[in-house]
Image (cartoon, rainbow, N blue to C red; front, side, top):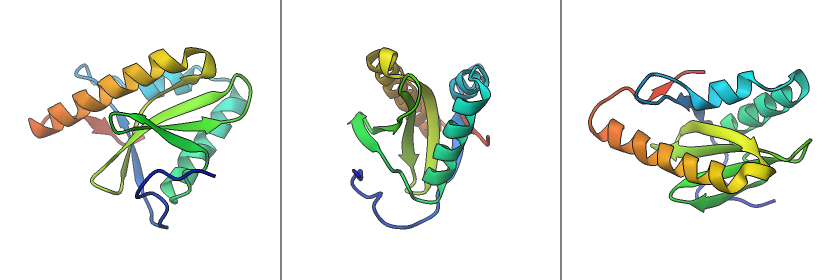
Length: 126
């Protein structure tokens, strides 16, 4: 089991979906397109992260973490941690599109931080 620096301690996190400048959630759009069984596994993984159990994850650069779910095509959830207790759900995908999904998640995280610094709406409760 791998732990990202600073996430090994037991604490609770709150998750929120990243929303773009048009108030759309890429994570929600991806999640809503999943079949019931993969959606349940993704939901469970997010719930585990909220309790501090990040399980099989790794840093992929730029402050973004990749949470891997070993099921089907190799699902991935891309998140970042804000203010030490807030999980921002940046998006999801599969192993096949991993490299482009990572780049997109990194761009969303940059956008989130820039808009937060400007005081704009940047995340919504799931």
